[in-house]
Length: 497
Image (spheres, rainbow, N blue to C red):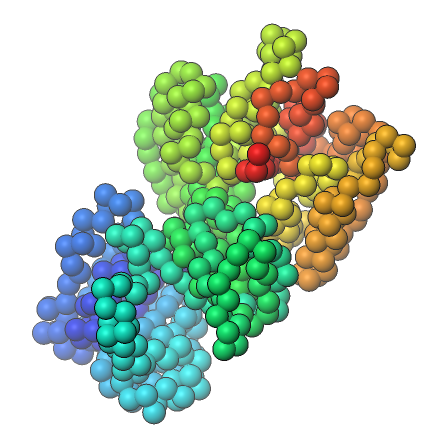
C-alpha cells in the first residue's frame, strides 16, 4: 500500500493516467511550468468515483524541479512512508536523472516513461521500471487492426475488473498445485505463457517457475492475489476481502475488539469494522508502523477503524448484512448453542454464519497476544485455503507453528490420502519460508484431545464442511472445539459441498 505517488512532469501523458493514480494514493505532481500545472486536472469520472466505492485521494500540484535533490527530498517527506515516483517530464535525460535521485532517496517503485527506446537500458541501470510509450502504442494499434471489434484492455467490465500479468518466481507457493485447488474467489487465471507456448488453463493445469501468468478479477483483491501467486508474499486476509469485521450482536466487547485490532494492525487488512446494535457511524485513520518483509526499517501504513450499526434484530438480517460487507475475516464471540439446538442436533447461529460466509471466522476468547499457531489436521477435514492462512499468519506474526494431528485408533480409521497430502504440503511450504514446524500426534476423541492439548495463548486453526448438523452421529468438530477451547479458534468452512 502506497502512502504517496510523486509525478515528475505535468504533460498530457500524465493527464491521461492521473484518473487512475488518484485511486491508489495521494498524488503530488511536480513541474517547472506553472502553465502546465494549471492545465492539469483529473477527469469527471474520477471525481464521481465514490459511487463505485473506490477511494479518491488528494491531488496536489506544485511548482518545482524534480531533478533537484532538495525538491525530491521535500516531496518524499517521512522516510518511513512508501512513496512511488513516475518520471514523465517528456525528456529522457531529465527522466533518467529523476530516476537516479529517486532510487538514492528510497522511492519505491520508480517508474520512467521512455521516449527514445534506445535509452531504456539506462533507465533500468538506475533501478527504474522503463515503460516505452512507443512500444505500448504500437501494441495497441496492432491489436486494433488485428482484432477489429474486440477490446483488449487492462481494465474490463466498466472498471470493475482488471488484468495483471506477472512472472512466477521459484518461491511461489502455487507451483505444482492444480488450478482447481487454488480456491479462486473473485479472480481467475486467464492464460499462462510458458516460454513460447500459450497454455490455456484448465482445472488440472499447474503453474511452473518462470511462467508468465495472466490473471483477471476484482481490482480490490487482484494485486494481493498476484503477489501471492508470484512470490508468496503473506496476504491474509486479502484472499476474501480487505476488512476485518467484528460481529457484536450483544454490544461492545473490549477484549474481543482488542484482539481484532491487533490482527488488523499486524496483517494486510486495510480496515477494521465494528458492527453492533445502534452504533453511531464513525471512522478514524490509524497510523501504524509495519515491519517490511524486505527491509529492516519499518514503514507506516494507514488503517481505517470504523463503527457501523447492525441491521435488524434477527440472525437472517445479520447474515445478509455480513454477506454484503465481504469481510476478509469475521471475528465473533465464542459460539454457544441453546438447549433446544443441542437436543435437536442443530448447529446454532455459529454454524449458520460459517456456512453463509466464504471467509474464515475467528471465534475469539479475547487473547491479548498469541504464543503459537496450531493447525489442526483431521481425516476428512482438509481445507487447502487453511494452509495458506496458517503460513501467512506464522510469517506475519512471527510465531512458531505446530501441526496437530488427531486420529482414531488404527483399527477404527483407515489412512486418509488427502490428509497425508495436506501434511506434506504445509511441511513443504514451511521449509520454503524457513519456518520450523512441530508435529503433535494424538489418538482418541478429536474434540477432547484437541481441547486438552491447547493453551489459552494459542491460536487454533481448524477446517470444517458446511453443515447444519452437530449431533452424536454427525459431529461438527470445529464448532465443538470453538465452543470449549480455552483459546481463540479460527474456523475455515470449505466452499465445496
